[in-house]
Each structure stands twice: as C-alpha cells, then as structure tokens.
Image (cartoon, rainbow, N blue to C red; front, side, top):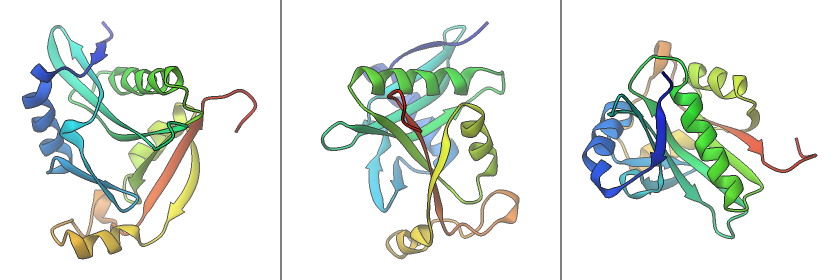
Length: 166
C-alpha cells in the first residue's frame, strides 16, 4: 500500500528531528552556503499504516518564483515513499506559483542523483568547492561520504514547473 502524504504538523516535531539526526546528524542543513533550520521548515511527511515513514522539507526563495527542497528522506525501503514525497513537493511548489523547484546534494551521493534523474529532474549546476568553504564554518562536516568519496562539492538538480522550459 502506498504511503499517505500530509503537510507537516506541530505533532511531527520529534519524528522530524529524529529523521534529520539519522540522515544529516543535525537539524541544521547547509545548501549553497546557506544554513537552514530544517526542523522549522514547511514540508510533508509520509505515513505508512499510521507510522512515520519519510519527510521532505522546503524553502521558498524570495519572490516565490522558485522553491528549494532542503531534505528528502525515507525510513522504509518500500518503493514509492521518496517518489510520493517528491511529487508532493512539486505540487506544492506549483500551487505556490513557483516556476522552478531545485535541490542540491553532495558530490558523493550518486544514489540520490540517480533517484532524482529517474523522476524527471535534470542536472543544473556543479557548485565546486562549496562544501570545502562551508567546512571552514562547520569543521565537523565529514570529509568523506558514500563509497569513500571525498565530499567537496554540491550538485544542483532542477525541475521546471512550467510548460516549454527544460
């Protein structure tokens, strides 16, 4: 059975914090050199059989023409949770009048890059060395990530929400 998706509510705070700690080891998420307090952001949760199953958090950029996905995670390996959360984020951005939705992931996270591309997202930009610069402010950021790859860059992926733009 596919998960149910609903907006984040105040009652979700403990689960959200646990999810952020499990995947990012912090409630503060860095993207493009900016720090986001992810446990205070709007977004959506997935539930399966009434149990917390995943999370997506969002940040509307000034002017609301684009929306950034700050976190996306799933507690279960069952197919469809991440895709359902991503679709909810895209719908929300479209309903808010955004023309573009985007996100970043670190250069070591090749599984995430494959996931997003399978769901119609495109590689948009490489932000070379940005993690190295953030590490000067946050020295406890790990040096290596998945598959022993050194974490140095952010890869930006995007999806345009208007017809005719690719």
